[in-house]
Image (cartoon, rainbow, N blue to C red; front, top):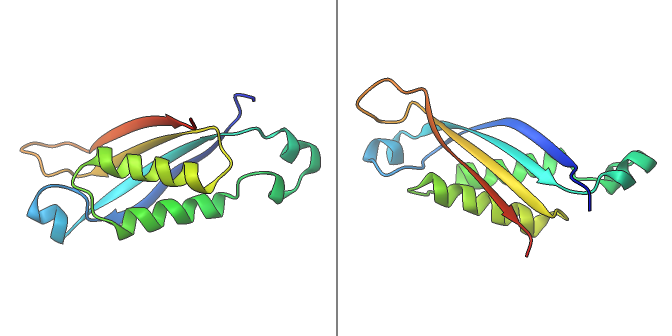
Length: 121
């Protein structure tokens, strides 16, 4: 296995994740970065999409889960995303970074977030 990583940065969506009523009803903007640990040698050698991970499909999974489910915690959302990506794609591991914009705090904060890494067992 190589240390190759396919990266997708800044997948944005409006979601309803959080513990406050405001977050559950009005929602917030979220941004997700994904690093997929995979071997890209076949794709490089043959220059064919079927030999690599389709970015559009990864985007679809992240958007579907981010917009469709409700999680109280970013930890739960990140774990759902990582687990789903590991299930659906031939990858050795995944890193998921989530940022929630304008969190409901008593002060000015741009984002809060989580960064997790999961590997296939």
